[in-house]
Structure formats: C-alpha cells, structure tokens
Image 1 (cartoon, rainbow, N blue to C red):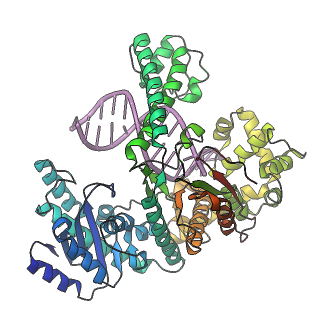
Image 2 (cartoon, rainbow, N blue to C red):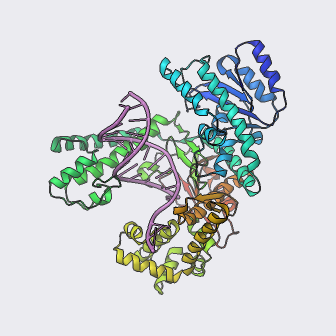
Image 3 (tube, rainbow, N blue to C red):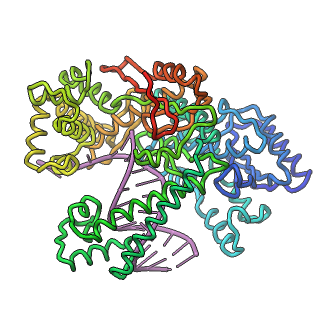
Length: 571
DNA sequence: GTCGCTTGCCAC
DNA sequence: AAACGTGGCAAGCGAC
C-alpha cells in the first residue's frame, strides 16, 4: 500500500496522472473540522483505490481536488456518501449521486444487524488493522492536544489515516458490490436515491421560530430552577437523582414495588403519578421542564444556523430500514403544540404534512390476510370496526374505551407483546388483558396463524441457511437472533413500511415534488411550500403516495399548518 | 475532564 | 414456553 500527501506541484502532477489510470473503483473521503458543514471547514480531500491513497489539504490545494472531481468520469464510492458529498458540494464541487456509490449502504443491506462503521467493517471483513491507524491518530491527537479542527494536515498520523480510509473503502466496494445482486440491487438503488433526496433536505433545513424558542427556553429554565431549589432546600438533594428520590419517598412511608432492570427502585412517571407526595409531583414537573428546556428549545437555539435546523438523517438508522434523525432528534418531538409550534414555514409559506393512515396496521393486515381485519379496513374507522367484530356488537363512539383497547391490542400484536406488557400499556388488569387478547385472537384467527408461519419459516431457514431472516416484498433482508424469532413479524411490517415510505420519496422526487421537502417522520412527510399553492400541492402529494397494490389500500391524510403544532381548517 | 452505563422518556 | 418493535438524548454517577 502507498499513501501520499500532496504538498508540491510535482506531487500534484503525479496525483493527476495516477487519477488517470484505469481502476475498478475510485474511493473518496473527506476530513473536516467538525460535523456542521455550514460552519466547520473542509480540511482534507482523499482519493484512493485498493492499493494507493492520496490526501489533499483543501486550504492549499482545493482547486486541484475540485478539478480532480470534475474531470473524473468513472464511478466514485464513499463510505456514508451523504456526509462527504455535502462537504464537497458546499465547498465548490458539483458531485451528482448518479455516479456515487456508498459502501455503508451496501454493508447495512447485507448485514442490517451489524455495525457499519468503516473501521468495524475493515476489521470484520477485510481482516485489516484499520483500527491501528485510528489508534495512532488518536495518540498523536492526544499528545499534541489537537482535535479534528486543529490537527495539522501535515501530521503523518493524520493524513496517512485519512488515506487509509479510501483504501479501505475501495477494498470494501470490491468485496461488497458483487454481493448486491438481484432484488437487493433494487433496494440499494432505492437507498442511494433516498440519500440524494435527504442530502438536499438536510441542506435546505427546517425553519425555527428562534424568538419563540428563546422565550420558552427562559420560561422552562425558570420553572426547572425553581423546582431544583425547592428540592434542595426541602430535602438536601437534587431532583435529578432517582436513587435519592426513591430513598426519600420510602423514608416518608411510600411503598415502592417496581424495580429497574439494574435492580434499583423505579421512580418513573407511571410510579410517581400514583404517589400522593409533594416530591413525586415536583420530580414529574422537573423532568418535563428540564427536557423541554434542554433537549428541545435549548437545542433548537444552539443547533440552528440562522434560524434553520439541519439535522443528521441516518437513512439506514434502524435495523429494519427505517431512518433515524439526530442533532437534533426531530422524529421524537412530543405531540405537544407548545413544542411543535417552534417549527414554522418560511415567510409566505405553509407547512404541508402528508402521512400514511395506520400504515403498519394495514401492512400487517396485508401480510396476515385475516378476513376480519381486511373487512375492518373497508370503510369507516378501522379500530371501531375491529372493536365491533371482537365484541359482536356495533361500536360507533370513538371515545368508547373498547376502541382504545382494540388499538392497544392491535399494536401489541404487531410488536409481539404478551398479556403482561399489553396490560401495562393499556393500563388494564392482567385478567382483563388476557381475556381481551383471547377475544382478539378469536375474532382475527389469521393473526396468530401468521405469526406462527413466520416463526416456522425462520426455523426452516436456520436449518437450511444457518440464520433466521425474512425479506420484505421489495427484497430488503431482515435478520433476527435465533432466540428473538417473534421479532420477525415486527421487522417485516416495519421494514415494509420503510420501503413504502422511501419509495414514496423517490416517486415524489421523480415528479419534481421534493424541492420543498423539509422533514421525514417514519410515515409523515413535511413540506414548506408557498401558501397559495399549499392545498393543491398537498393533494398532489397525497395522491402520489397512496397505493392500491396491497391487500388493503394505503391511504394518506393531509394537513396544512401555519405552525407544526397548529392546524388550519381545511376541507 | 472524558467515557460508558443506567434510568427515564419522547416519537412512530 | 414466552418474549411489545425501532430509534435519540439528557442527567446522574462511577471509573478511568
């Protein structure tokens, strides 16, 4: 293996002549001063193949790197392309995903349950001493008190490590690309198309009402500090210490029964809300105020770039194929208008939100083909219809508790819950829960039959192929541990929902409808579009997303919002 | 001070 | 035989 740092014209010429050679694949990588592409600098741009790597310091030789990208017309592979393509394109490159490959996507599609970091894969698949280069760099960084932003580009441990990443990536490509065959190749192409769309979406950003966040942050911080101070004076410890809270409650005669996995006394909200004690009330309030101030409003203020959040979307964040979002975690914002109202459209625009109706329940019904579930989706409210079938009597009031119980039981089935967990979630006595699940199974016998069929399929595969897995209709592989076969039903449903969601994104992109796309949330797409076009736009998107190629139709709902938490009236 | 674990809690 | 799934993040806390 050879590694080079471009420092002179001579080396630049040698690099360009190396770039002109024929090779199976060109690998690229970047090193940056941080993760925030809108403010952190691009420091090194690396090119490599299976035998040789080049590092180009961007501040000195950026023109050379951009020339190389512009003139190279073969395919280029990255490991997690979105990060590098973003950095390169915000620094003058014009890379298109048409010629981009991604070895991380390949690795995850082949082994969704394994770690997909470049170093992990290098060690696992190439037997490489990839982690040694990283340790050498870490040691040098520690010695020089350098971080990613300050480590000198001429430090051998840095640029050599950087070169090695491209060599590893090229070798990974040569190993993995031939394994992406058949239907998995279609899934791969879907993921790369999604990566492109999400890249644009992240760069576009979602608009935040910063003055509103600042006001709410202050208010929540004040509330939080008042509660902390009260607890400190009254009891001599902070509200955040669960062990001390539990001890104090017990000292005051409260009987605790729920345990944590680690063996302590649980003082979670479900426990505290049953306790008549000022400390219990203060802890509940304090946790919420703290979280609202720090995880939400505070993050929106500090993470935003001139009023826009540019989150990190991991297009293969979950083992099932779902996306995950971090910095900040925009997929798990409480459905509380106070928080969601922080998200606003651009001036003169509206937020258009289109989401699939009960997509996992519909896909579950598609797979298990139970006649009762299929019938319950025919018209009207599914959970009312299902409740009526279970109880053999018409139930028409959405507030009827039997509807909520049916809903809880339905999702318990999708997730593989037993009577105990179902009872806990639905907040009903275990006897009632057990009885209801029996009635559910009696009304929808296809559910249990299907779950058994999946488990039997997986058992057969363990014998014939050595591992347990299911494939989604698209061909996405969903493996499970041998002692977790019950999870496969959920993986099939969640994975297929991810396929549908991602296909809808690509379809919308082909129709030219993703230019204002600002956020994906598992089954919901949010757009930021001119107010005058919002309604027609929403109808078009909704129509494009809906599908009739499953046993039950996949339908969508649509909302036009002045803030994410508030709704316009519209018909 | 950093790291990793535990606990708790939010989403779909 | 029975088993609720997938994530991200903050604070506390002990270990290094």
